[in-house]
Image (cartoon, rainbow, N blue to C red; front, side, top):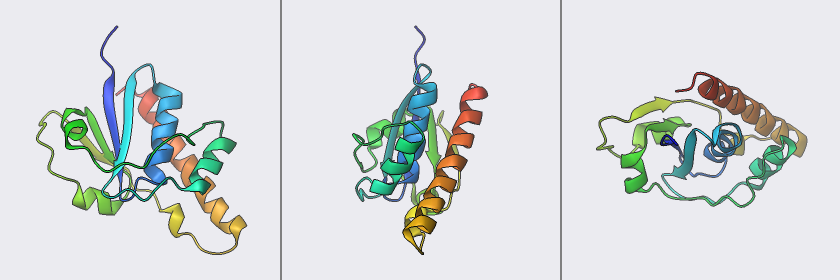
Length: 141
């Protein structure tokens, strides 16, 4: 069996966007990819992210919020940042073969309004992340 490519999703707090991306890539591409996610800080798993992923048929409730691990960072095939802050503050990667991408998505945790409006923002970001993951898997990077 060929080696899986390691994809490392990074965000500021590893609570929403990186967790959603992690969950979808595991669900859609686990035969081709080893998937990890982390943040510049660990803010804990956002319960709304868990809820909207559950609605999409993906269980991320056992995920943990992790701080970036330099060892994983330096053996990753792909480092994908999901927020501008993580993109700007990503630690130096010594692995020169890494493919570093920035996929910018709004932070649903910053959404305001009624619970329904906030959840709508989470679903919008979830669906945008899913579409990007589906393209990534289809292109067989």
